Structure formats: C-alpha cells, structure tokens
Amino acid sequence: MRRWWRIDPWGPRQALSGLMLVVGLVMAVTLVAAVLETLTTRRVGLESALGMVGALALMTVWLTLVARFYLVGIYVNDRGVQMRYTFSNRTLPWSQVAGFEVRAAEFLGEPTVRDACWVRTAGGAVETPVQRRSRATGWRKNVGPVLRTEEFDRVVARLDAELAAARQGQAGGGVVLR
Image 1 (cartoon, rainbow, N blue to C red):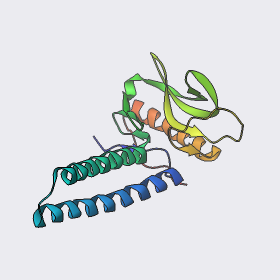
Image 2: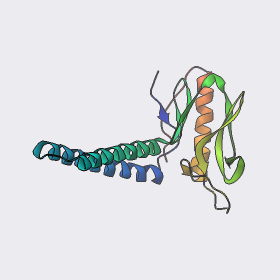
Image 3: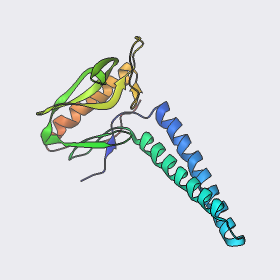
C-alpha cells in the first residue's frame, strides 16, 4: 500500500491557505509562549485564564479549518480514490468506481455554471470538489480547486488512467504537473 497522491494540481487556493496556515502556526506558537510566560511569572486571575483558554481554542479551530481547506481535492492510491472536502472525506475503493464523468456541479440540488468531475458508482454518481473554471454568469459553488480547462481535462484523464491501472493491478501514482 502506498500513500495517497493528490491528482489535481496545486494552485492559488492552496498557496493562500498554506500562507494562512504558516501565519496561524506562528501566531499559535507566540500565543503559547505568552501563556506559558504569564503562568510561570505571575498570578493569573480567572478572567485572564479564561481569555487564554479561549484564545488557544480559537487558534486550534483556526488551524484545523485552514489545514482542512489546504487539503481539499482528489487523491488516489492503489486501493481507491478519495475526495477530501473541508468538513469530510469520502473514500471509494476501485472496485466500486465505474468511471469518471464531467457534468455541472450542483448547489442545493440545482446545476451551477461550473462543471465538476463526478465519480460514477453502481449506486449513482458522487461529485468531487474539483471544478472547471467558467466565465458564465450564474450560481457557483466554491468548495475546492477551480482549474483551467486544460488542467481540469488532465485531471479527468489522469483519473481514468488510474482506474485502468487499478483494474490491471498496477495502480500508478503521482501529482499532475503543470
């Protein structure tokens, strides 16, 4: 078994969330150092202690959300395909995957102006967070990477190749390069 490989390319969304993650980590380290210094050098009142606990809890939530936002995308390994969203993951073994298709992303059950990559299974289709950029006006759903047309087509082609390799018992892996 090998680790999960990201299929969709890194873009500005990941760069921004990575920067936010680094800034948050620096702030968290600074906050922890300040809390430790305060606790060791002086007596702390109840309000100060609650404020420190609240600040640490806020930083924990912030770092968790930014890290999850950073990892949103489609991943594969020799066992299957994994769709990582901000608040959940969904893993499908290759035996359940019938193929991949491109169709309109859905928002509240209605189609949007952007196309998304969908995973076809015996029980229906599952929308992935990866979408194709569109200049059309209308509803858009921003849940994951929004790729240029050529990048999006490479992702779908790579997913088809991974599925074919898995069916032959020789799943590959790697990141799609620009």
